[in-house]
Image (cartoon, rainbow, N blue to C red; front, side, top):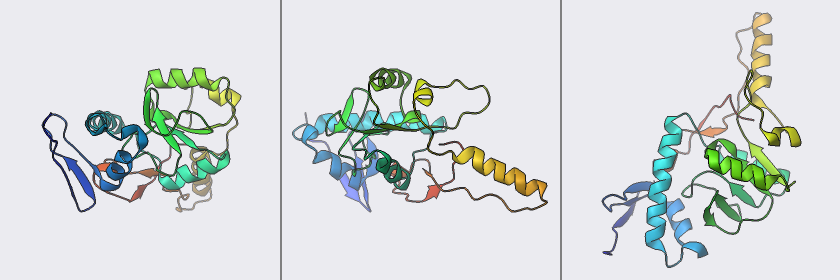
Length: 211
């Protein structure tokens, strides 16, 4: 196979290979290609990133937004988490010892206390993790707050809710309205903007749906 052209400029790395093109942050590219599981397998990594970018674009088109690294660091501290299950290979945070999703191993191993980014998983990946988690007790799940009659997941029955930013802020706004106040309840900026991973955008957005 001919050498693939990859260029880096202004903090972004772009693959110019026809049919496998992508743009991600240069930090993400440099980190991944140095990981043991990708050493000597650059072409496989290039193909994996292409699949991951396509998948992420579809998720974001459907409304998904990635949690900020500040949120993930906070979740990491709950159970001294060492692994992240979910997100995409090119922007999973490097401060975790291992990262992956389903059968995809981004780096590190597959064991250890885990934080799960629920909405970033496919239905098959969710089912697989639920089966594995039945014998685990050292996990933390970041997921959307349930509204109305939405189905409850098994981890919500066996686990304990640490916090919910949806109901609390909603109730505060309702209270302000009853008191005649126009002041809106403060919502933390807990998620990234769409396409941040291929623009180098570090700005944060407000989410009302995650707990």
